[in-house]
Length: 419
Image (cartoon, rainbow, N blue to C red; front, side):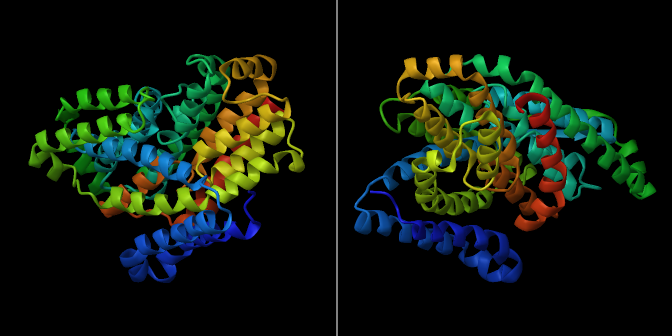
């Protein structure tokens, strides 16, 4: 049974709460955000179970368990790896750091790269870290960097599971990836250069006195990261993959020395915050995605341009992974093809390559538009906040950074490669 449009209200309310409450009532939100998220999720569950008589909501819970298990495992394991960069945190060094993070995200995922690198990135810039450092880290490492492989970002992994060949995406999006990445790295360098020049002389002197040095501890946790990444490819039986991830994280946590956790200022609050907020997001966005899937033909989506912009805009607010799958399903449905048939998927990417490329890069790139567009975004914000780094709020992030910086980049990518 098709959900009623009013069923989208809990999702809208939750988005507004995430955007407004941290400023309007910070103390209340800090103490009660989990109850707000869970209550709105319960409303949607009740709607599906008692009014629409549908059990589609169970799929959202299943996807959430997969999502939060991966994030938890990567968060805990990366928290056991200590990386410290000493020396002068120049704009060039910071830019190279982000570029390395972007490449690394294709091998251990945007979540893995973000959790591994955000702490040393904050520490190496601790004397002058500001909003744009965190924002550009999210842009580059947590999102756009992971557009080359199915491991890189959840939307692409879903496409791989449906039958898109592993290396197909690299060949089709590399030029678009490097174009967007070079633009953002250049902009970051300019912003960081201005920030560096404004820094008090004593800060520069303190950094210069510290000799260039790279320190790493807890390297055995890279083995646990490898196990988690490898387990991503396990599909049956249900939740075996998640059990392996969580067990690996538990072993890692127990084996890691306390001094490493102390150096990383490691605690479980950031992952708890993400877990509570995203259970509400995954559940309440279910009717929104269902309505979108059912009415994609009514909207008149049929061109790569339309898929690029519609997938992109909604990926920033509905989590990019399910949005990607929804639009890919809708695009194939228009041509009478079934996304659950590998043969149909291979036929579609051969005959309508530009549709798949538009949906793929849009879902990955636009995931950077808001904190909830991609899982690592909120994690990075939570870790930065936990380490007393000033970070922009939900709305400020958009009007001050993502809209004025990213939208021109996305327009350029569209004009050069999609239009």
